[in-house]
Amino acid sequence: MNEAIETVDIAVVGAGPVGMTLALALTDGPWRVLLIDSRSPAAWAGDPRALALSHGTRQVLTGLDAWNDAAATPITTIHVSQRGGFGRTLIEASDYDIPALGYVMRYRELAGRLATRIDAASLLHDTSLVGLEVDAEMVRLRLGGANGERTLQARLLVHAEGTPGAASDVRVFDYRQHAVVAEVRPNAPPGGRAWERFTPDGPLALLPLGDDYSIVFTVPPGRAEHLQTLSDEDFLAALREQFGGRVDFVASGRRAAFPLALRVRRRLAGARQVWIGNAAQSLHPVSGQGFNLGLRDACELAAALFDHTDDPGATQLLDRYARRRWLDRSGSMAFTDGIVRVFSNDIPPLRAARGLGLLALDTLPALRHFVAKRMIWGARAWL
Ligand SMILES: Cc1cc2nc3c(=O)[nH]c(=O)nc-3n(C[C@H](O)[C@H](O)[C@H](O)COP(=O)(O)OP(=O)(O)OC[C@H]3O[C@@H](n4cnc5c(N)ncnc54)[C@H](O)[C@@H]3O)c2cc1C
Image (tube, rainbow, N blue to C red):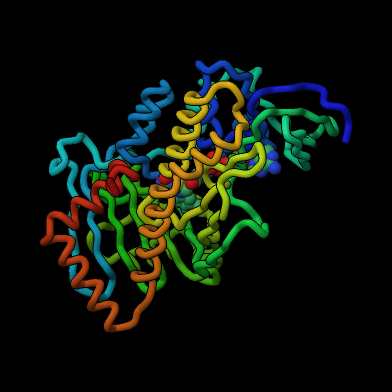
């Protein structure tokens, strides 16, 4: 490895929304922080996803002056039902004395706003982490990019590089489902209502986004390929068939598909390294937990760093961060994974049990409040 050409306190690999949130949360600290991303500036402009952001996430981003109000559509009601079975429930913001249960925002608008708040000098684009070495004092990062290789050393390396590939330290549960995403125009504006419909293929979510819906249409991989090749008209017909008649659709935007798996990193902290956001855990998008959970990772790591400013890579600090993330992380993963497993099948006794579950949600306020609080606050629902 070459001689280190530069030293920083904290290197954050991955300038996605979670890495950028961490960098912003550390702005007033004593550290020199450098964000490194393999993509070029604004490469996320083409990202087709929209994310449901919780009320708690809005509060955090507002505190960091990174809330993009113009791009946010409030969710005031969530309607939950299942295809081919009885039972349905409504979760309403007015029951919780808050203006909205959550907000829908395009990934690109979330990332774009965060990027405007990051000092250009602390963000290296078109640069990938290609190797590293760790000793007691430093992590040495080998970085590759269009201009060749360079080295950098940091006292702490934060992995925020998104969904991990195959690695011995990552457990993978493949759902054998793909999420087909698109923006579709309904025949009447959504009026703040989100829909979550469980079908044997997987959940179908309609999230209000301005006058449109952002849809997450979960289906087996082969069907996802097929849905992408259909004409707009045939795609809308397939959507109607899956969703039922409560809403009609008149136009569809471009489609894209994401393979879905639960990927869990066994250890959140290692020698002078820590993992946050999708790099720590990648979840199924049902119930919109992924980014909200990753943002809480970033906040908790920032809080741990501010508690212990001497050495940002100290083992004690990183272990404390990992311990503090246990409850929220395992609770969010169990909640999301449980929903996918219970609802993505067509076994008749389970279908009836799901109907009873939805009925219970509708008639038992305590149960409904628990689910609602998960959507609104995340971790605080468990406390
Ligand atoms: C269809 C779908 C719908 C979703 N809906 C929701 C939702 O409603 N609500 C919600 O909260 N979450 C949702 N999610 C999850 C959410 O998108 C992720 O949790 C979130 O994007 C994670 O952010 P991140 O910054 O950790 O990772 P990413 O957004 O993946 O960003 C990682 C960054 O790291 C960079 N990078 C990767 N490797 C390297 C490297 N070697 N060197 C340098 N840089 C690197 C990448 O270029 C990228 O910019 C959804 C996901 C999907 C697929």
